[in-house]
Amino acid sequence: MNINPKGLLLTLAVTIVSTASLFAQKFEELAQTPPMGWNSWNTFQTNIDEPLLKGMVDTYVSSGMKDAGYVYFVLDDGWMSMERDQNGNLVADPKKFPNGMKEFADYVHSKGLKFGIYNCAGTKTCAGYPGTRGYEYQDARLYASWGVDYLKFDWCNTDGENAIEAYKTMSKAIRAAGRPMVFSLCEWGQHKPWRWAKNVGQLWRSTGDIGLGFEKNINKGGWTALSVLSILDQQDSIRQYAGPGHWNDPDMLEVGNGMKVNEDKAHFSLWCMLAAPLMAGNDLRKMSDQTREILTNKDVIALDQDPMGVEAFRFYAFDGIEIWVKPLSNNELAVCFLNRSGRPQQVSYNWKGHPMVDAVSNTSFDFTQTTYKMHDLWSKKEVGSTAKTFDETIPADDVIVLKLTKE
Ligand code: GLA
Image (cartoon, rainbow, N blue to C red):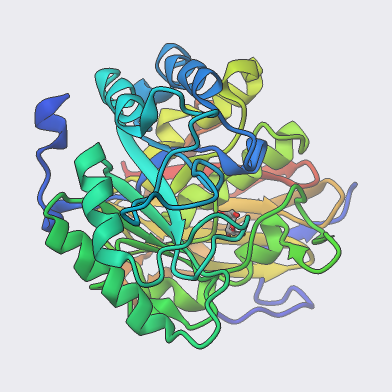
């Protein structure tokens, strides 16, 4: 696309104005759309235990998260005892889980949810609990016996290990254990897993850890927690590697954890545009109405879960305004206007000026040939059609998300 800062060719004029059958899934069918769930890490780190988590499971159902499509309940780091038992088996920390992990898994399943757990390819997990290195087949069998449906597998304490081999070994171990589990690779994109993990697992982290920042990274002393926007900027170049059953994972959601409402809304919208796994990471028991409305917006979730599984691409960027475009099945299209300029901006976009063409999905949308009606997925209103210029002011750090359907 020809972007001319002087505005001659621009059609975007930016003006600064200020249950059982549920679990009978085959390996091949896993994660045909990006996995959706909840993970304990972002809010609780290793401070997890059975009463807290059972309360979270209950709220998962009563809050409408389950009805919105979230299904995995994933325990992150910190669920284990510091030592394996005399047979080399991992043990759930008896103080945190007095009834053991099988009982907890059964509780999760009894609510119609699927159960996920965490470990690490190294000798120890990132928080120092026993890692899986050398115990891959034994650990996979144990997880299968507990009824685990999802394994997140981290990359701490892996000196001398070959990432591709380590993740392949665990993948084979899960298959050998016989219970289909979504396998979530978490090596932070260090070895470009998008190039080799398609047949190893169903999702792979593409960056380091997310933090509670929309624009700016946060220095954590020794490591950097990445902002929503810096993670976003690392996704565009790897979008061709994602698709049904194999997803880029830009990390779990920070929605409801302390960013501004508009930032949460933008974060969630962008992750849905990216066909990202949607792992909520907030305290569901204390979720505000605004947070719940964001996390359970079915129309926005439907973009994420679109069966074609195409990640959005950055179609336009100028002066802090970006247009992200996600081709959908049924010849529909999602368009996200992102204002990352830090100040309110007015956009005036003439759809007919440029066709939206995507070589990855082999789709194109020519607005001179076809008129699309537009539905605003946050205001939940019909907002005209592509026959006319789209004029709107976008607040700072916010988005407008439109779904375009042929008229
Ligand atoms: C790493 C992962 C996080 C989390 C922690 C747990 O940092 O990237 O998502 O699992 O380890 O210690």
